[in-house]
Image (tube, rainbow, N blue to C red; front, side, top):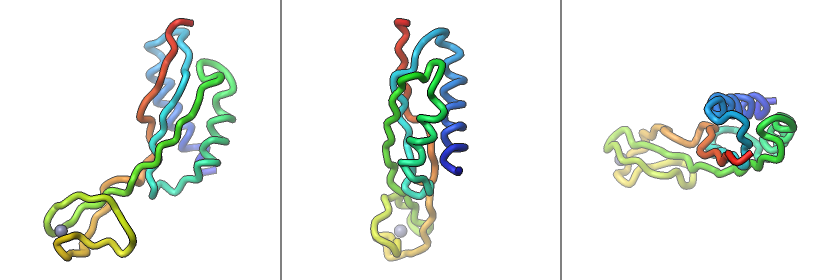
Length: 115
Ligand SMILES: [Zn+2]
């Protein structure tokens, strides 16, 4: 499952960070999911549940935030959020490059250091 490996990669980032917080617990992980990342939120949640049954992740909460698709015009360099397809810049150009909204990444981690 595509979402499972994405979630493994995301949690790897958290693991690397948690090395600095010995014995701390993860309360919440905020995951940014680009609208073009080709992910099903339900499948991400399922992957999260499956991968966080133990260790510092036990009872951690997953928050999924959708990221808009960001476009850049190749003519005038304007950056804007994608609306309805087809994408056209306000300058009239349709030479559009996708510069954001294709990735899945951890945006924030809430750690409980008291335990
Ligand atoms: Zn333009």
